[in-house]
Length: 86
Image (cartoon, rainbow, N blue to C red; front, side, top):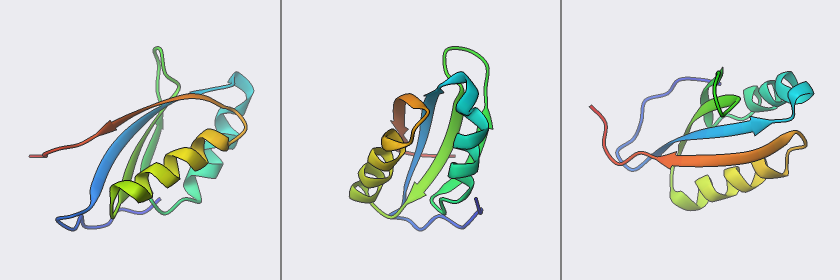
């Protein structure tokens, strides 16, 4: 996970993940290996993990989300795509 400058066309998304209880650390290790994942947090509430993703376009975001969903231990995802930042 590396911070990089955002180009004007990059897509920034936040993804909420539900994980099987024993798989949280495994999932975090998997996320650390993905260069598109800029930040990841274990959180409390209805969701288990929050990640920030930066990709060059929507097809790349779709591909990454589909890959995440195939990961053993990820039960459910919800993706929030940013429109504008401050």
